[in-house]
Length: 265
Image (cartoon, rainbow, N blue to C red; front, side, top):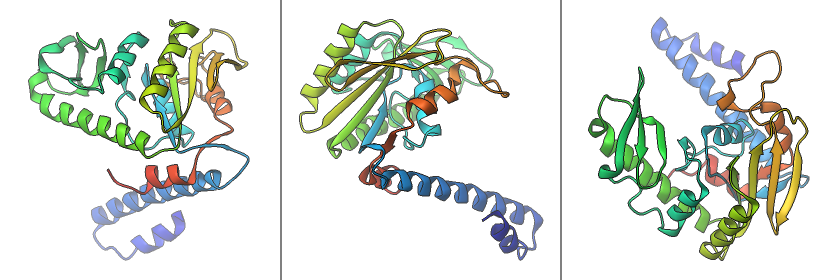
């Protein structure tokens, strides 16, 4: 594929345009390579298939690892937010995500070189990457529109899925908290078959332990934050080796593949 792209670009005389075109085609070629990998898993009966696989946070690590394992491609509301209380997440679903980003609820807690860290006093969610300027107001309308779009996508995709896997990382909550939340989700989405993965980091535990704590609810413990291999990952990125092992039998269904990689919304 790379050789074909290079040959095609030879005929572009302008060096800058040739370089830009080559880079664009190479990026697209990787996209379609990934699409074929996901399709292969979608059609392979040895995998457990879900029409939709959603990260519920509570940190960026979960969504990043799902993307590395070709389980998620579109962005959803909780991918890059920080929160450490499951009751806040449960309240958002209960309220149908209304008034998620009211301006009066937002305060700046930190100013970095490239962005602001913004805290929502009502929902207790922390935005680490959304506000790029030196004040909230400069970015507010764009950020609000982005989250309205992502919540709408979340609701539409769940409504059109038969099977949904929720993946949630929380090191503090109890089994009772998780089961209560899962039962509430089942009340909200009665037409869907729901499965719930609750991930907990257990330091220095390099063997994945999976415990079924309720029907379709699984508690998974291991050292999710541990470094591995020659190229050490940062803590927030997670242990790629353990995540890959965790998701080795999990895949999007054919319908999920079509929605994530083909359809625009």
